[in-house]
Length: 467
Image (tube, rainbow, N blue to C red; front, top):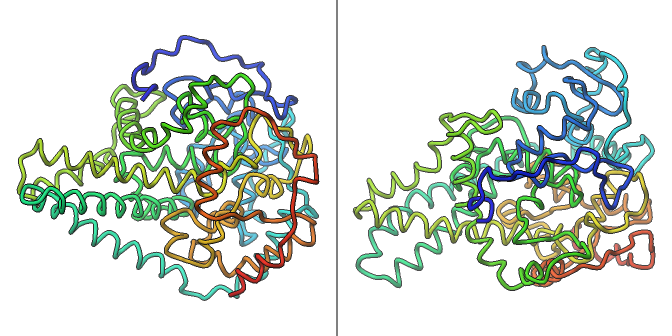
């Protein structure tokens, strides 16, 4: 709630010449630490160092995609919001059919005048590009209608949510215990629906992506913070999802981390529980005040559909209905953030800004392996994968694939790791929770150039994914 208390009061001018710690040859994001820390702030600041010159930068080329916006298969939002930025990582990881690469030369304008402000490479013979090529050639192994499984789960969860929400209001006056049980259950269902919305936010526009808005978080801002920032710049200083948790939860292993921030290892459940409310207030105020060019649109109605439905169908006075709505939101917020921050990126053995990376410039796919520890107990379980951010490594590598499709590609992925003498590290859910806490405490940097810290054991894990 720190950002809300000091909303729009950050007086410090950003330092455009500041450098990153792990990659000191690169500029520090201009607006990363500027309140209220909205994703759109980060994206607007990114333009100052990307050298895109009000065009779209992909590798070292500048492209004018203006005429392509209205026909972009993924929807116009992706191109509209990224104009003036470097979209290399997004371009490489979100197009699997080879069509985008064929169309791109048509829109070429000129070469970029400055080097990329990114440490990631996509060499044709590198880890990621060769894996991507294998995946593209083996898409036929995925059953044709596999995505419908996710659609079906969303339908049933939504039906349960529609029934449970007013039922909580009906039952609570007669039985507080039963009412509280239903509220917790409904909160879990809401968190699962929001996680499902995450699955669709990476792809072309659809109504299911707006499930994210039921939480109070805006899908547009989520697409920036999660898709454009977290997925492409995982655990680096450009990962907005880390900065949005600060200063109360500080995951970066900085030597000057204060003791009260390390104490976040104990008070993290409180922060998790109010993340939805924090997002709702921040984004609503930003839209009302037209901060960073935002404006009120119809999507800001979505979070209030739930309390309206509960009030109309639940039979309770408005104030009691709003109270039950917010308790439901708190429960949902806790589950959503809890599953999200134990998905694999916040382990104390992962790379974070402040650590020493393998190389000054490194393959983007290798970096993803350095920033994730997969939860093995979620392997091949589609429901857990869809509603708890499972199968996380392949989801990051190929985010436009549905969670139902990922399990078919793990044998290919594991064999590819063996070829490049690297691995997908794995853990259990409960170990992930402990490791998450350890990362909040951690101040000492780790050196990823030390190969002895990387273990083997891929063969056993490969068997798990072949079942």
